Length: 191
Image 1 (tube, helix red, strand yellow):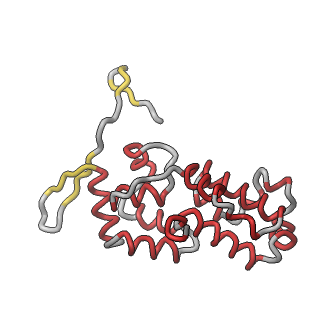
Image 2: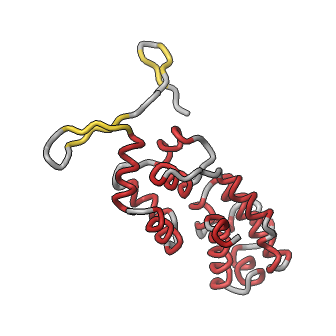
Image 3: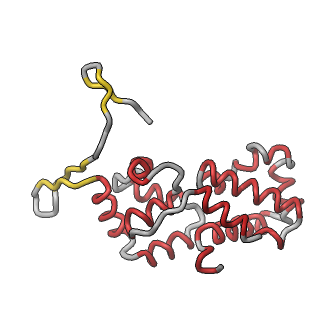
C-alpha cells in the first residue's frame, strides 16, 4: 500500500469520492464504491446478466478493461473490500451485495471437490498449479498464453509439451481451462 505524506506527516486515505457532471449539468459527488456500483449495474443490469457475460467471456481481463473505461479500478475497490479477492468477487460484492470469497478460498473449494479425478496425474499437476497461480495472482495470469512458461510449469515441460502431450492438444487444454474456471466461479450452482 502506498504511503502518503502531507507536510511531512503520514496520512491515510479513509474514503475516496468521485465528482462528475451529471446528465442535467449538475455536479455529482459520491463515494467511489457507489460510483462503481452504479456503473457496473449500468453495464450489467442484474447479477444474472453479469454471470452470463462472465461465463461467456474467454478472457476475463476484457471485462476488467471494460470497467476501467468507466474509471472503475478493481485495485481501488479491493482497498474497501480487502486483499486477496479477485475481479469476480469484487464485482459481485460491490455491485450485487454478494458475499466475497478470496481467490485462495475459491481455489481450495475446487481442490476439495476432487475436480481433477477425471484427468491423468500430469494434467492434474498442471491444473493444481493453475489453481495455485489463480490463488496467488488472479484470473488474468492463468488465462495468459505465457503462464505455461512460468514456475512451476517450466519444470513440467515446454508449453507445447504440456499442451500436446499432457492434454492432447490446444483445444483440450483450453477446454480443461474453461472447465477449471467453471469450477472456480460456478461451483455452488453445479455442486
